[in-house]
Image 1 (cartoon, rainbow, N blue to C red):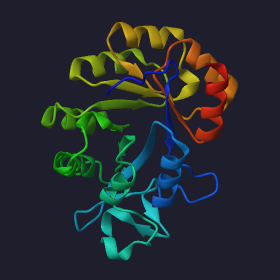
Image 2 (image 1 turned 30 degrees about the vertical axis):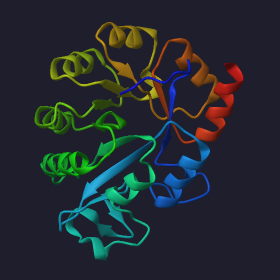
Image 3 (image 1 turned 180 degrees about the vertical axis):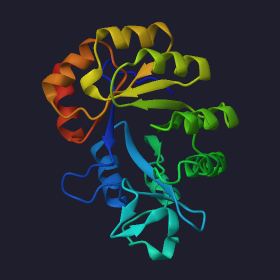
Image 4 (image 1 turned 135 degrees about the vertical axis):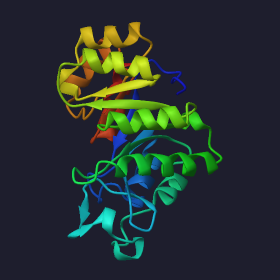
Length: 233
């Protein structure tokens, strides 16, 4: 993924700009584009009729996404294609989701995602595919080495995740911000990995993360973060 020309980390709007609108919607992504953030983070599921849609939770309005067809879902749930059309000038961190009851769905979703991204005209480095399901991310990287990938992690230890990322050729690790320190960043950098913590909403914490050299900040407050980091540059 291409580096910013500015010294600050890339700012990713977590599920779009969603302080005043519904998250993971076309409107949230439109606001992110208007705000001028570097990228957005969004979550994807695959429906029973094979479409990739954007939503965080496994259910929406009581409907299980994995067992529903697209017409069954509320209108505010966009397809990934529609979301990417809005986000086409931004970087997009695409998180693969699957329910605990159907973990293999993540593999099928990964393959469908590869097919979708390969049909699009944007530079492939604009996308960053991630998941807590590291096997699913490994499959994406194995099937499509050209697509940038990242491993999400929630808690320590992180050493094995960094080793895994290096071994499988992933671009980055995405740790929860609470576990990021200078040792983690140094270990990642020494192994050629980027570090994009989530979800960074505290401005003082952002200062600490910038100081130790993270590459991106995934945040619920992208407007505040942009202004804050601009004032520090």
